[in-house]
Length: 174
Image 1: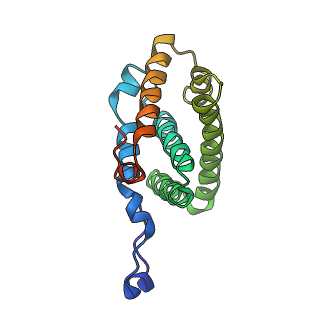
Image 2: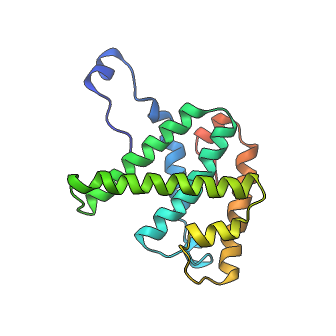
């Protein structure tokens, strides 16, 4: 997750500003790993499926931070995500030469999903269709499974709208 503070940060008593977003990031990852997504929601229980589920929740949080005018928090949270994904790739044995390309594709996927989920959550776009395209990657999935995920994400969306910035940063997203 967050990088260790640099020598100068420690010397000058400055901490990494992303540390304050670590509880929120942990809550997003924990939520994305909950079994109901994979059992009732039929999200593929694979590396890609878990990535896509975490990104769906992360996208909701980033959109809410944007709505709260917390652009810096959103940027730091995105940096935590990038650091985590970089570390996960390295644990999987991906070498330095290609890690950047993989992270670039992940960031592109995050950007596309934020746009799709924003259109569905704040506009008139169909969230179920966005989920079929982005979360399930076009695979055949029972309507009940998509409805489960859509319902749970919509409930979270409403809850996120009721949270103060402080509650959100504390990771109170469940």
